[in-house]
Image 1 (cartoon, rainbow, N blue to C red):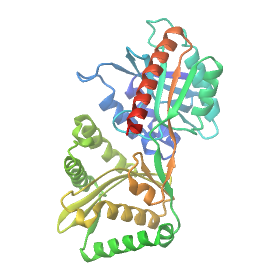
Image 2 (tube, one colour):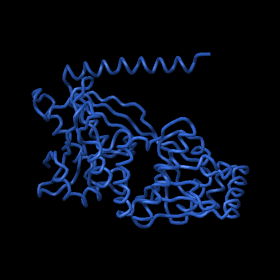
Image 3 (tube, rainbow, N blue to C red):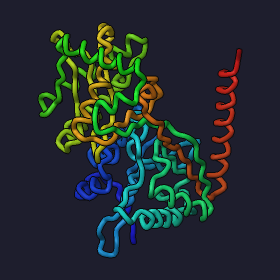
Image 4 (cartoon, rainbow, N blue to C red):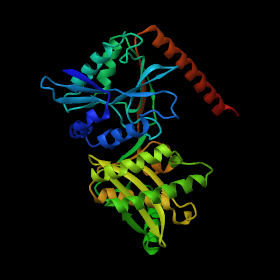
Length: 378
């Protein structure tokens, strides 16, 4: 196997179809999500302290057919040196990022990527291929490509530092809504049934965006409800970031065309009550973002939206609902299980890189100790 290092997004466009096949239905790994992310978060602006460079590794077989992609970018920082990261990281909170590979070729792709990276352990300081650190956030701790990749890098002298990342809450769906309710306590079942009956009496309507015009309406409702809910708590909310907002305005129509977006809103008394930004793929529903009307909490819009999400997912034959990161109490109440994601640092076997890593560890340990002291303080 050989590797082509691609530094231009247009050079990758022709691989979009094969890229999505390897993404295996995970929206956060899709070409639409990651290429749009790079367009908004990759090019340097006046807000960026560290310029970024696209560094996607395309693994090809003996016939020059792509069998894997390492969707990376690089940036140079004072604390980390030249750092390799996964496309999609940062404030958009992409989950389950990783290295893509054809089914059955995971270890071969991992080995090819490792050989490419190891050849650059001791590149000159001026070489654009030199790297000091790989920092991967929110990756699946059991990823089939990442695990052999880390093992091989450790054997070659790299330092691999693993710590728990922002985990996700997932639930496997039963075959029926009654079976879903049977998982809950008697009191919870009573509350959910009462809520759904009240929803019917109040004639709360559910709208699903199926075209671009409806999507525009749904998205504006989502942004407005999300902002108002967080502002009622004295916080700005995610959509306060103009870059975050622009990214989602561009990526949601692409996800809708790809069949990977369910953008819904609930309407009561002719006004939006709640809105959900859901992504779908490979039998899963991912609840990415939501908003509720803070002035109509008597409707219990959050609980209602979650109940309707689960009911609809079961009716349409989905097998899993992923509530993603965040430890909101409702996730455990619905019997979702915590799924570990990991944050991983891979340090090149070079003195300067190791010294930077030791400095990072010292700062990290001090912060963890301070946090522990605050929690235990009487």
